[in-house]
Image 1 (tube, rainbow over the protein chains, first blue to last red):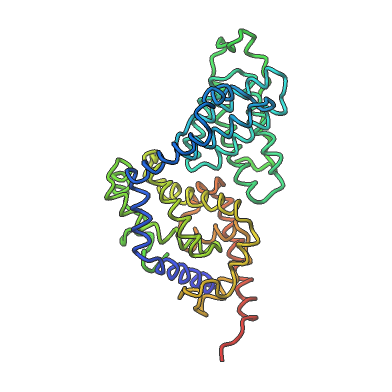
Image 2 (cartoon, one colour):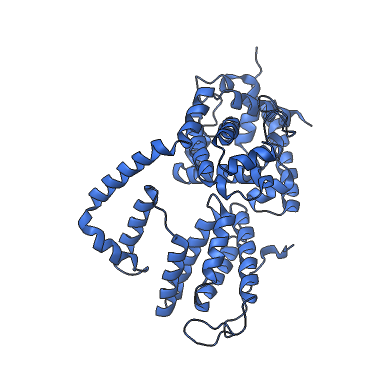
Length: 218
Length: 193
């Protein structure tokens, strides 16, 4: 039976035809006009900075070093959102992993795990997950093994949490599996004599294993 | 999409040819603008097909186009263009739905939700719209990409981060569900005098 699919295609054609060329041109022109957008962003940045108060610069710098559980952590994230909004993007993945490292050192593994999960979710849902994956992988290669363990735990937790869900769990599960494989390959390829920065033995970390919900690994 | 924008052969500009994609990626703003002009109506149609209003769809398509302009330089493999294009489109939709909420969106699937829209007023589209409204988000997206955009299973797999085999099964199931619902809606639709 082809009628519903023929109808669907006709419907789609009609919807596309209904878009006025003026609307399309305006949208594309706006998207491709950085000279128009940048001054607006600059104004927004100035206003936002003014509203936050220039005197808070020192506070922002202090808050930048905060981790979840610290009094200034909420302020740190708020500043990040403002910077993201005005287009001043930073290496958030690296910062989150560094924060996770501090938490691991403090023994707060649960909070570290939540932080890693949040970071992974953002990576998976970004516009360019492949590039973000690569950034994450390269960052994981630079952090202590204890943090890499937490990353793996995050993957395991995501995989388990989404195992019984049809949507969007399947996306996240598959993406988590792919990322887990990349990380596993990366870390298994490390030279044996490359110990962690603190000088502790490097081979004490258990071999990570990513569960395959439903047992359908290709 | 078979009408204004053409088939998968690329004869009418969509999908764009590999040289065009490479030129756009390498900074040729004229070519990039031309590609995005062809893609914009497809984005709007996709969002409206997913149940968003025309105004929301055009706004979301504009945001998606902006995201594409920002990230086109990171598209290393031109053959992955459509996967990249629809990944951005889908991520924007996901973010929007998270903000707006499901209930409001479903209500927009009424028989005529836009008095100024010729398409929404067409009786011939009511059945397919109501049938699409009863599908899950995932089924709607898979069917649209497969039946309207005619993406391959591999391209859909890339976009949805699924295995091609799983996409084949999902497409078959979604097709069966749409057919069943469509027949049900056809029988219950009021007959024009």
